[in-house]
Length: 114
Image 1 (cartoon, rainbow, N blue to C red):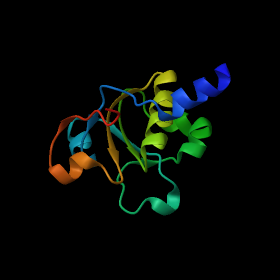
Image 2 (cartoon, rainbow, N blue to C red; image 1 turned 45 degrees about the vertical axis):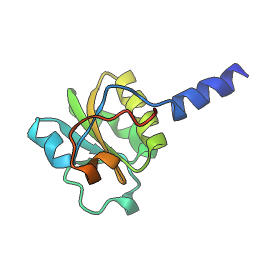
Image 3 (cartoon, helix red, strand yellow; image 1 turned 60 degrees about the vertical axis):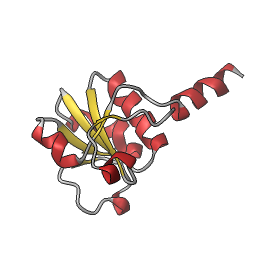
Image 4 (cartoon, one colour; image 1 turned 180 degrees about the vertical axis):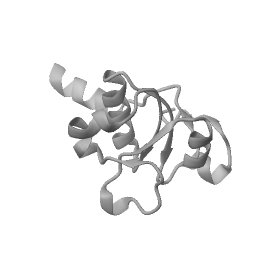
């Protein structure tokens, strides 16, 4: 039972305090852009494309420091942020494929779990 709760927490409980912003804004702030969507979903990413399934094998190719993460959905974002933080990366911002803050044109902390 405890294992099920841990898995559900890791996948579905939102990571707080990360800014939702566009990829270009993340680059302007000097962050490494890492796209963890599947290869066939990526059309115009200008950063590193390492799908989540391959992160365990290729995370060492990401320069240490501040990271802007691009994910396809919230579950992928949650597990990607937790994986990278566990390995010492500072995930400061993100962009979802269908991010609400992108359509509003806002920049700031976006708590999607509320």
